[in-house]
Length: 189
Image (cartoon, rainbow, N blue to C red):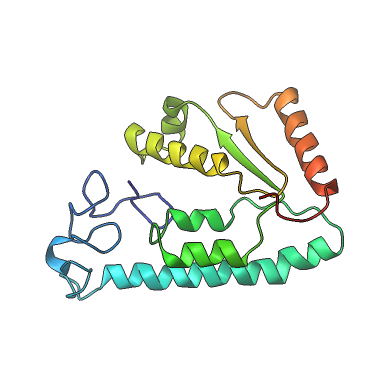
C-alpha cells in the first residue's frame, strides 16, 4: 500500500512502495533506524510509528466529535448534509489498517450516499502530480474496493470528473442525493 503523507499527499521517507524503504515503514514497521516497531527515536528523536498511531486515534475521535456536533443535529432537523470526507479516510492515513479506523467506522454511522469522483489515472496525475501514476492507480483501486463493500446506507456512485461538468452527471448526483435524503434511515447491510 502506498501512502506518502497524512492525507496521502506530499513527501516522506518511505520507499517507493511506502513500506520499509526509509527510516520508518508505513505503519511504523520495518523501518531502518527506528527499529521494527518504529521505536528508537531515529535521527530527530521522533517515534513516527507511535506518532501515526496517536494521530489515527485523534482523527477517529475528531470524526466522532464532528458527527455528534454537526452532522447528527442537522439530520435530526431533517436537513441534508454533504461532507467531502468521511471516516473511510482513516483506512489510508495516518496509520493504514489501524484499529482506530475500524472503531471509527463502527461508531460513526455510514453516510446515506457515498460518491467517488473519478477520472482516468493520467487526468488525476495531471491534477495531482505529487503522486506517481502507480500510487494513484493503487489508491483509486482501493476507493473502488471501498464502494464495492457497499458501505453507504442507500447508495454508492462514481462520478466521472475527467472533463467539464455536464448536466447529466450533475443531474445524476442531485437525484442520488435527493433519493438518499428521502429514504428511511437504517443500515442497508
